[in-house]
Length: 142
Image 1: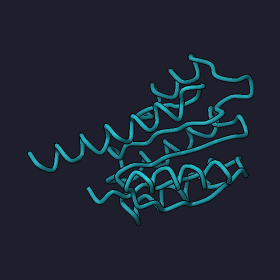
Image 2 (image 1 turned 90 degrees about the horizontal axis):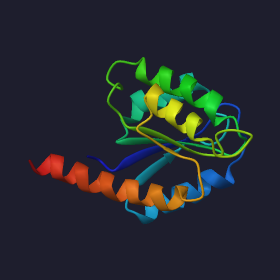
Image 3 (image 1 turned 180 degrees about the horizontal axis):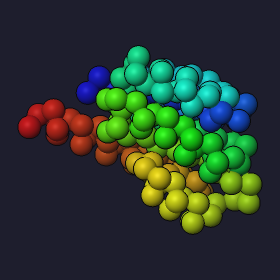
């Protein structure tokens, strides 16, 4: 594990404050972060995944269209050789109506490793990345 996280906004989301916050949070936890910024098209996301070979991909959205944008981004990443197993998570405001468990379930079913979309999202995300580091460390030791 090289401790590299590729962080990105979704294709239709122009917000950046969420990306800055997540970058700082991830760096605080010891990750190196490549922040692609806002409005990242799925093809660019997949190209950068191929180039960087991240340990984890984090998609963040604030505009409420993550439910639509996320699966397109994930399909592009998963369609590239060598990226089928890279963990990809998504979080933020996934729909315009607020957290909807059915949307989160559909995103998991589409292949997202985890979905963070409610009032406990940041706490759960911190727990996820802590567990992710432990699991990766255990894998590299065995």
